[in-house]
View 1 (tube, rainbow, N blue to C red):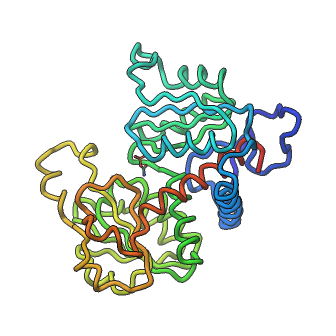
View 2 (cartoon, helix red, strand yellow):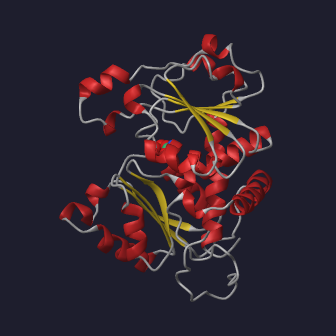
Length: 325
Ligand code: CP
């Protein structure tokens, strides 16, 4: 469900009744199944428009402030591309050490500054809860582009859109999540979205990187069927979506512990011979060694297509929170 509306003063031409106008996007917990259907519909329209005309002026005159306190290639550049394909402009800060953050400026003050110049703010920050803190400080909509080990809601929405576009449905799916399920915020967010559907989840991870028990309990209460494994062999043959994650070196306090699990799973052509012929392999990327490049040409390898779906979803979200969808 949308959060309370911010910025009630709409310029002429904006849609006052648009359900997501002025809302923050902080957690996937905000979304119902019908919200997802709505987003998928808008994202699909964006895809058609980009394929037909490339760039169009839906957000002409609007400005996005994009601030990343952690590295990013896909999320940062796809939000910029999304705004520019919609005819808007971007203030891009992806090296906060060159901003006043380096002088000790607080997160709320930085956000209050950016909203003087922009209509919407996208933020990635290493601290859990930072996006919510930014949203509290702002009168303009704030979109969470990843808050530490917390959530990455726009990634989960693009993941769900990828599944929907590639397999044509979200119900009756067996989804297997593989790798770092403890620190992987994308799997935390996606598993919550999948709980809105009639799906089954397998979690395959080393013992020390298990899906957090509180997320398992949260989904259990919603009736989600979940099974944990240490190896892939049992789950793979029935899997419709294999969601692979990177073991995130930057989240470990000990290099030795990271070394002990970093190569726990390496997906390749040989392993994938046990999988269905009609299924997809996803990965939020970047990858390190967990998917061998020898699998990239397989039609089931959806991870590069997944990045493109992200552009359409982020175009949809920007248009929605700015009252144009
Ligand atoms: N999937 C994802 O968040 O990638 P980036 O870290 O490159 O943004």
